Amino acid sequence: MNALLKTAAVTIRDDAEALATAERLATHFATGAAERDANRQLPYGELEQFSQSGLGGISVPASHGGAGVSSVTLAKVIARISQADGSLGQIPQNHFYALEVLRVNGSEAQQRRLYAEVLAGQRFGNALAELGTKTALDRNTRLTRTANGYRIDGRKFYCTGALFAQRIPTLAIDENGAGFLVFVPRQAKGVQVIDDWSGFGQRTTGSGSVVFDGVAVAADDVVPFQSAFDRPTTVGPFAQLLHAAIDTGIARGAYEDLLHFVRHKSRPWIDAGIEKASDDPLTQQEIGKLRVRLAATEALLERAGQFVDRAQGEPDADSVAAASIAVAEARAISTETSLLLGSKLLELAGSRATLAEHGLDRHWRNARTHTLHDPVRWKYHAIGDFYLNDRLPPRRGTI
Image (cartoon, helix red, strand yellow):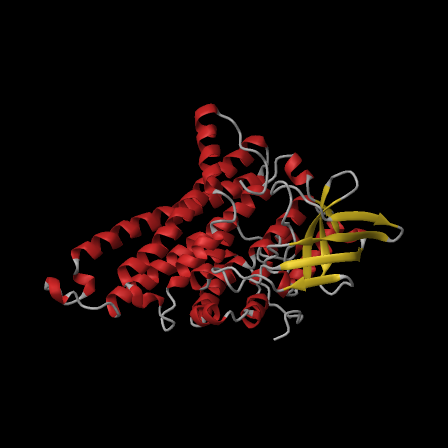
């Protein structure tokens, strides 16, 4: 299916409809997740269904025709899709991140035009990160003013969603070192999207490279970016909330598959006089521990979403810092829980779980790959510093 097909999306009206739609799609997406992972089948068709369903527009404010769902609801939507397929859950993350930057820093005219595209079913990818820079925050991609607007030159990597998008929001630096998010049309001359992602997890996210070679862009597609961190905004905690949702969803997917496998496919514990693996007391104890851990993770994710919602309503230094810390707590536990559940699934289900017919090893591989996005150890540092010293966390996209 053509990744750039323009869709005629339905409009989701409220949070309840968004959650119901996510449930319906996730149930469908789950049936082919193992096969897509095993064969690296890129999910063009599934993403088109996602777009047509209206889920891509649920964070568009009601004032612009969208549902304006809460951050709590958006996190639950991402988690539910990630439960079905971790790669599919990650692809829209940068789409919603770009929409948050647009909400915070875009002009009224930019919001009106770009929100309309999203409500019509268009997808936004991303071209933010780069390889080979001194730090993860440095950028070499340049935004240069021209007689007719701007041009972009540079190379990006980890461009999740760009392969499937109609626009590629791109972080570029101008001659003064200021960062801008440029909503580059995917079909613009000089844009090359390269499918060179070869991770052993999250295999179908298409998180490869994008090259910009003298790409002409209109001034109307250039949105300030750095100023979203120079002042208190929710851009950072919002981004991290969705990453926590991805890991939480992967953890839930591993848990549900573990229950099914132990109940129906594990070999009986004949040597111990146990007829069913589900009757083994040690297995029951492990399942109990995992269930408690998962429930805590899901509760902290919802709590973090509530903090983000409050900060979006009344952004200031304290509310944004509180949101960042609450999200860091959710991100820390979701990292550990997704890895734990992926690993315990293999331990309790046994080596058969890695067979192609089951493909349950994808949960651990997906969690291990996605949790490397940014170091969780620094989140614990920020959390401890906040509670010990009342020191506010830095404002950036990784916390």
